[in-house]
Image (cartoon, rainbow, N blue to C red; front, top):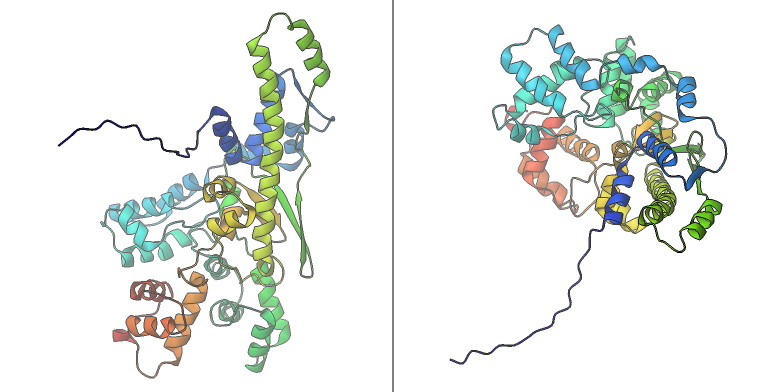
Length: 422
């Protein structure tokens, strides 16, 4: 066999991770507070950067709007860990509760589902133990609403911990869990037919709207929660504005650049040129970051308009990939943008991330809440108890494409026993 040496040329596309690209990615991940601090630092260190106009200092603004006692407060995690002492727990319960607390994000939401927590615990704890600890320990803690998995559960926890009458609580639970969530008007008509007065219904909805959908944000230590965007709503129209107040407007001192360039014309100074380039980069990158954050906020709000306006129970499925496709960036960019970004809404300050709800089906958009409602409707109307497999088949005939284990998971979340015990 002959040995032949040959040269083959191939074209290959590679993404070069340049220092400039890395800096841009790092900038995207910064919260508003972190970004302001970075800009202030750059202005101090880079002579070619200056503020475009005199605005009140960031610290001055915080002195007006924030109580600096917040620095001495505990973080959410520290507060929850401390509260474990208030429960009569054995060693195993403390271990499980600590795992659950570590799975709670900055807004107070339990970010991992039961099955994922089983994995995290290396299967020392099982689903029923985990659910029991969530409901009887974590969700009994302050702030009310902590440990929620979705906004409905967040509302439920706060209502159950309120001083409302049992009758009002029952009506609110009926609104939250037993009705079509598409339109409050439909829910109202149905309940009025059942004998509920319009006044009582409206009072119940008002109580729902009072609930804090991000109860954990009050426990952030030192890092101040300051939203980048503000949404204002009028009828079905909404407007998104970048909050300019307290945000430093920077510009490049071109007069200084011209003067310096004349002086170093004969002898180049790489450090000075680097500072000039850094100033130009920061100006461009900050604008791009803020514009991208606004685009993401606009698309999220366009999808969740009903949630913001008149229906606090309705939230549509939305994920990173959908947003990325809409605004023309990579899904990983969206992940970075969502980190520590907040939006001021009629419901208070909310993290961007809490407005994203994944679809439980790969072929059809359906949120976990909507699936739980469908499962409950099927079980409520059954003459003979249906197994999870039969429920899956029934829903898949309608095009949902769901596995039996998915039905089992969300049936359990609904606190509905299996067909054997129904």
